[in-house]
Length: 143
Image 1 (cartoon, rainbow, N blue to C red):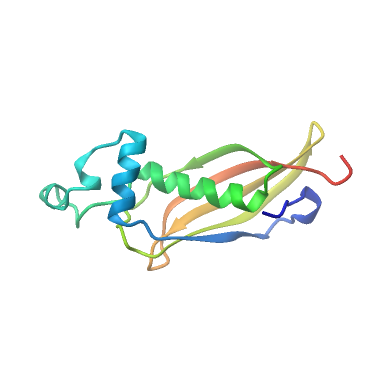
Image 2 (image 1 turned 120 degrees about the vertical axis):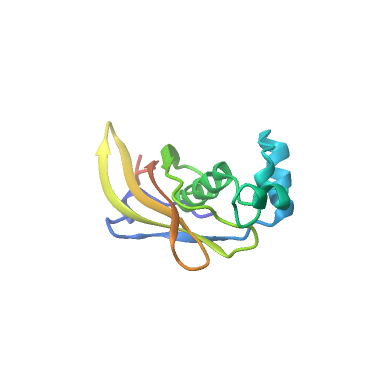
């Protein structure tokens, strides 16, 4: 994984997109790892009986996908300082999801290169279902 440096980033730059496609099997594995066994994430009949179109992806898993978007982009020496998301719409398994982001601000703070990004998970129709923000500290060249 390549290292991204503060000096190489500009406001308006795109965060390298990350494609995801969560299968129902991944949801079961995530339920086991996270302890979130709410049936709407693995029992289709239960989900439909509760007014859903079928099983849905865990919100926290979508948050994790966006965290991966940012940490993959910043490289191994970057530090994720803040990650926040808002769940605006449900996402379904086996949909082609794309995590995207844009740099919205950059500054030097206490000798650290701080970069802020708007991020979002988009469903197969291109709609941002899980928008958020990330703040990272990137290494500066020569430090």
